[in-house]
Every structure is written in C-alpha cells, then in structure tokens.
Image (cartoon, rainbow, N blue to C red; front, side):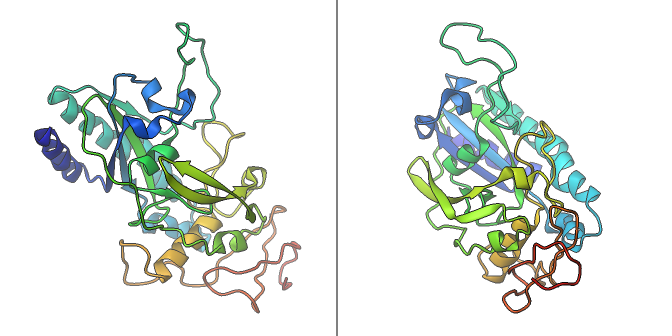
Length: 307
C-alpha cells in the first residue's frame, strides 16, 4: 500500500492537485444512503477528495464588478469540467494501473431527485449523488463555515472538489482540528439581501467534527446580483456563492487576519465593495459602522442615500 501512496503523491504533483485527503468508510456510517458514496461502490474502502484552487485572480473581475464571465470559466465551469476532471481521471488511472478499482465522481448537487427506479430491492434509485461537503470534511481537508461554504486552511472558500472511491484501504487523513472560520459574521453583514442569519444556526456533525452553520435563505441567494451564480443543474437549487459578496468578504477577512496559508503581496479587497439589492439598485454602505472588510448596507434601494 505504501507503493500506491507514493504513486498517488507523484500524480498529485504532476496533475497540479492542490488539495487531497483520504476518508475511511466508517466516517460515512451515519450518512443517508442517498448521500453516501459507498452506495455507489459498496466494496469501496476509501474516499479520496481532490481539489484545485480557484485562483484569486479569477475573482478579481467580480470583486471590481467589471467582469463576471471569466470567473464562470476559470473559476467554475472549466475548473470543474476540464481542469479538475482531467486530474481526477488521470489519478483514477494511476490507482487502477496499480490493481485497485477507482470510481470518479463529479460534484453533482446532492439535492437532485432520483431520475430512475431502483434496479433491485434495497438499492437506492439512480442517480445517487454523494454529499461532497460531508466528504471534504470527512477527508480532513475542509470544514463548513458559518456561511455554509466549504473552507480550507490554504484557500478559504477558493477551491472546488472531485471525488474518487477506491477499494484500496489508504491511510486516513486526520480531521481538521483548528477552525478556519472564526465566526466573525462579516459574511452576513455584507449581504445586501440579508440572506444569512447568524442568530439562527445549526451544528453540523461530520464524523465527530462539529461546525456551527448559519441559516441561509436560498430564495434570496437565487436573486442575488452580487456575484452568486445560478445553479447550472437546476435553478431551483442553491446557487453557487463562491464569487458572491458574502464569500468574497470572507476571503478578504481571512486574508487580513493571516488565517490562510496561500499568501499574497497585496490584499484581496483594495476598495469598498459594490453591492446591488434585490431590486437591482446599488446600495450604499453605512460608513459610520462599515469598514473595507464588511459592514452594514442600506437596503432601501436609493442610490446615493446612506443607510
């Protein structure tokens, strides 16, 4: 098995994989069958989560409010569909060349309803789409922050993941002990739609790791014009919020507190952020309580009027 680990490590470097973690089967025991990767591969022993960064520059056009399309390519669609998929496919081949079966899985939303019927009694109906958030935490490379997004110690919210299930029993990665999210609540303060309620939280437990997550009103996120992207699989599902104002404010805060290991010469947030309310109007910051890392916005929809 040490030889396989060495082969995987070599492939990780070759493919430019930024994040990798290994989760043993027992960490998924409490997970519902429809969200459990081992429903797809019952004889599997290990879930491998691999991630590539969303380069900080891919968020620059959104942060400035001047270019959204290139984030959709380099930060989302191409990153998931091509860059990460190719790395996942090549790593699967490395594992299978060593004699172990490996199942590549794309991050389809877990909430998509079954599109078929069960092929046998006791088997979940297709398609089963595993819970990638749960798996990334179980693999020891991420946590779920107060804002409901996956965070890593290296990139904060700036990454995407693919999954591999294998029947090779690989050494487990320890769960993250130190929290990335400090619970500052700046994500909620930055949201001009008030979609994040930090006063209404639930504790999410993944294999014994407990995380406090705020209630998110996704009906508001779906009409967000501040960098949130509609869910490309179904508009009724939660949108992609990694480029939204809440997540960008989180990145600015984590970098300012030196919480991330991916360092830069200059700060991410270079000026006060722009914001648009649910009516499509620009909103204005309350300059008495706000700072460049997140504060209160006026939600009255009037241009040039302080909240």
